[in-house]
Image (cartoon, rainbow, N blue to C red; front, side, top):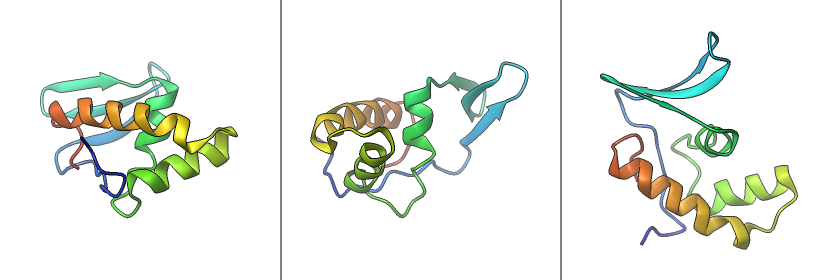
Length: 90
């Protein structure tokens, strides 16, 4: 279980980048690439090492006019999956 106060960061060796050829956001890691959908891109651009998960969800809720309590479980699940693959550190 990930705490609301956990601060997700993109670790050293992993880079969030916009692939101009495919016109998609991707996470680049040594010998790996992960294409991101719009939701993952919106979450990961907010993973700046300063904001916790609750803060990221509050910002997303304001941007997309949603209730933070409705999106926090999905954001945690996505970040947990990315952390398991070493694309994100929590």
